[in-house]
Image 1 (cartoon, one colour):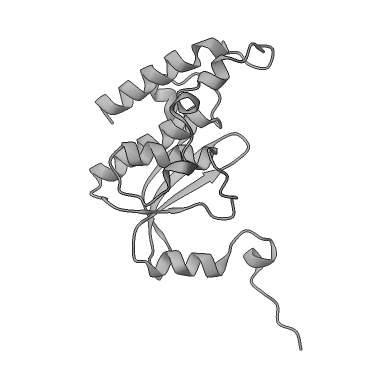
Image 2 (image 1 turned 90 degrees about the vertical axis):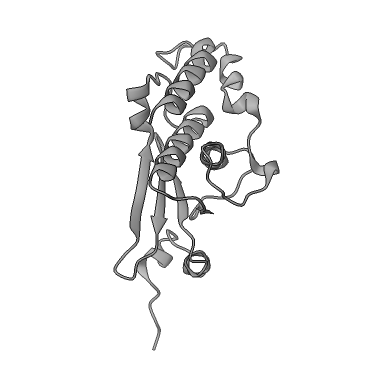
Amino acid sequence: MTTVSFRRKREEKTNYGKRLKLIASGEHRMVVRRTNKNVITQIVKFNEEGDKIIVSAHTNELKKYGWKCAKCNIPAAYLVGLLCGLKAKKAGVENAILDIGMHPPVKGSVIFAALKGAVDAGLNIPHSEEAIPSEDRIAGKHIASNNVTKFTKFDPKEVTKNFTEVKNKLLKGV
């Protein structure tokens, strides 16, 4: 007789051992998920009936603040992390732990840019500074140095200016 494992485990969507350790901590989790076109961040609290989402931020929300660039790059991830962190502070969340799911923990990646945004918003999230992207990458200077404009409707040289404008708007009033 063979046992069939959980569907999400078979599909490699959930690592239940890792999830159990995160839940056992009793802390809020900052869940960061990257899709092909967006970055989604949520502050989640475990509940036996199902996880309860305290606050959520999506890169589509950045349009309200004037974001004109791509929604799945490092600057956008930082801004959505900052937005989620600011919302979490308003909701009374002080501490969290990072939940990256099945994403590989790549140094300087979009996932860690979102983490940096939440930390800059004032959340206490344990992390290693080595994993965080450099300030130049967070501000989009690596995109601005790219001269290829045929794949975007937005001038890459304007990314750092747009990033600064949106960051200032977020910090002034979420």
